[in-house]
Amino acid sequence: MSLLRTMGIRMPDRSPTHFDVFLSYHWRDHAQVEALARRLREQGLQVFLDRWYLTPGQSWLEALESNLAHCRAVAVCLGPGDMGPWQQREQYLALQRQVTAEKQGQTFPVIPVLLPGAEPPLGFLSQQTWVDLRTRPDDPVLLAILNKAVQGEPPGSDVQVAVQETRSTICPYRGLLYFREEDAPFFFGRAKDITQLAQKINQHKLVAVVGASGSGKSSIVRAGLVPALRQSREQVWEVITIMPTDRPVRALASGLLPFLEPDMAETKRLQEINNMADAMLPEDSKRPPIKLRDVVERILDKQPGTDRLLLIVDQWEELYTLCQDVRARRTFMDQVLEATETGQLHVVLTLRGDFFGRAITAYRPLSDRVQEAQVLIGPMTREELRLAIKEPAKLVGLTFETGLVDLLLEQAGDEPGHLPLLEFVLRQLWEQRRGSLMHHEAYRGMGQLEGAIAQKAQALYQKASPENQRRIQHIFLRLVRPGEGEADTRRRATFAELGEGLQPLVKMLADERLLVTSQLTGSAEETVEVSHEALIRQWGQLKEWVDGDR
Image (cartoon, rainbow, N blue to C red; front, side):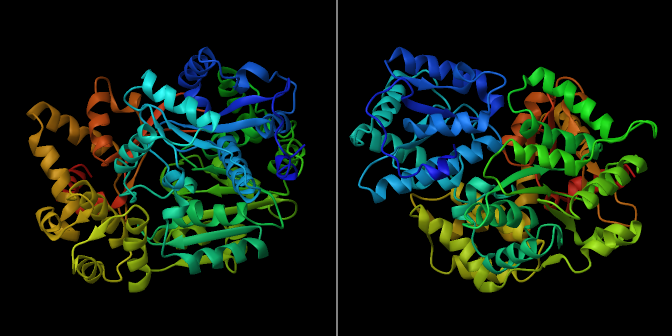
């Protein structure tokens, strides 16, 4: 039973299948969420946690949707990193149900719960109740606020103060990080590109999004295209996002397996990912390889009512910069090309413009497919940039000192590489705001558009001890791939590759938005990368290190 078909039902007052709250979460946060579930249960709430009630062999999708339909509220638990694909689905269903309930004069609370280390999704800022457990996960006052919200009690002064305090800590700009699907309400200025891309994906099974580094390709796909497809009344889409890494076939298996076997234990899943990747790369012709198109069919069979599967391959250029195994690269491309000839799979790849020539000349079958199925991402117009600057601020009650927006627009010009610098500066302005005002003094002090990111990186480097300066140089050199006739690019590394004892320093650099840490789907290892290639271009000290290491 799909919740999409049960939006109009009235919830029963109490029945064996009724729960007070449905906990939606990413699998990596299960330990914290299970502890939260136990505390809520101790307070007398009936809590639905999938690990407690779902068993292997059940249809997880139908069971989750059915139980969500019979809960009084949904708590969306947000930890470090992006929301998972199952959590995205649960969030959309919950928000749809909330809208339906409001139209019927009822309430259906959707409550963001921030876990330690959370990067709050901007799209939840419209919710009336937030529970911020980032620094006090066991605080009885905060747990009481969550309990009240679940019960549907009107927010009192204590809740209003807590929500306002939480909102004041959330920046409406992403800095050097891409906009995520959950940040879509704060993503402005790319409406034409999103419309064009949505049209292309309805006309073609494989579409290439091509643009300069820093043009916003990842954000357009993740925060623009995906929400647009999810809101379609004609099809129901499921979305899988991967990056090729140095082992693209394994990356593909990592993205697919959670949908193929959603109830598989994480330890077993790691092993099965390797098995699946090997089966897609047969050692000999006696064993027919697993085909991507067959896997897609099985995934959709497990999700009744889902019409289409969108595979996003972000940073396609990693096939050339990171993957040294020509056979694996060719197999990955062949699997994608074959699976998108017919069937219900659509693929969107993002590709840096300076790698486009290499992509289409290196493999003719790929070239033939993307010649007419590409969306070129150019610089934003002045008015589009104005929207991207002012509209997010307006949503959270921020203002700019007179003339500051025009100065930002003048210095940004129409250079695509200036877009990440602009987002970085806007975040810095937010951090140095006076009350709700973002002002000229802070902008001048940070070195304005061209100097802000380099100034911040250099200041952090100079404040470090001599030993930590050597470590910072080592870290960044491991995270930059020197170009050979091409621009220098980012490379991803695990903590093990960086060496022992660097985790605290990496965390500090990540907290300052110079690095990004993440955990790739299906991998137990945490990875590190430079937050954006704009840092490689702008920070003179880093360029000196890279040039000296060529």
